[in-house]
Length: 338
Image 1 (tube, rainbow, N blue to C red):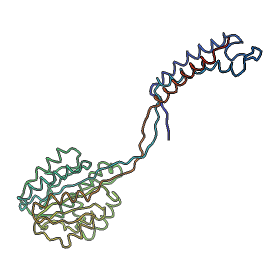
Image 2 (tube, rainbow, N blue to C red):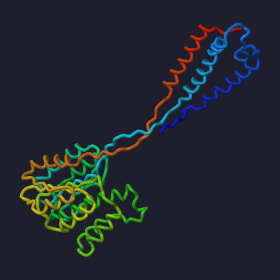
Image 3 (cartoon, one colour):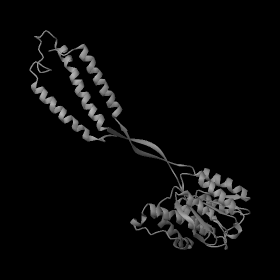
Image 4 (tube, rainbow, N blue to C red):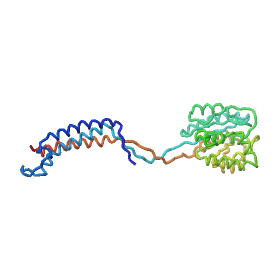
């Protein structure tokens, strides 16, 4: 669809005195002047007299178009374009005591992972036998905040609650959606980590709760979790129950298990989310696995319709020149007849 607007419409007012003068001139011209009387008795053909008056017509057209050029007419057309969008990515890292030798490698690999994905926004979650929300960061596009949260990956005491780390990551995603999409205006309660962990742990309440979350948030496309640990879960909600929320919302969860962690049933559970389980035989494999996960999270490309503006000035200026040249040529070939 085309739309035309004038950036400086006041320039069109120049036409008012011009046409007023033209009207006065026309009143004063004698009956035998420009187009007012075209007679055959003069001995000149009708066509010749008609052509003799066209230069003045061309000049008028050139003047009117010149005022339009000054008014800067702008056109707008809606075009279809491809737009690349980023994901919400949560980097979740086990900071329990056994991770002391792995954390320096994790910091390097996670930092490079963020650098490889410039379109994504990131949150960082630290966990041991609890989720340490104060150590990481919520979603942000500000890379220094992300790098700072990754740099604070230091070992702590306590066990390893992988299920809690997963629930903490998923509620971080849902909380950001709740904020951005203003879900509070729809009377949807703010996501609470404690409530989510409790209700997902309940065999009686879990399925009802999952349906409630799905109804409130829908299928959460464009988000993923990458979790790094070096040991089996030994505290908190089970991994299976924690992943049930990711499966319901179709949020891929990738787990990197370092050392002797066996995939077993873990692999199939993580694959159901759209993610997967990767075992790193040593810290040196972590970087390669992060890169592989990045390749699995292909770019989000959407078709959008956006308005584009362009100027009619060049076209109108060319037409003005054509009118003036035509007026000059016609005036030479067919001079005005007195």
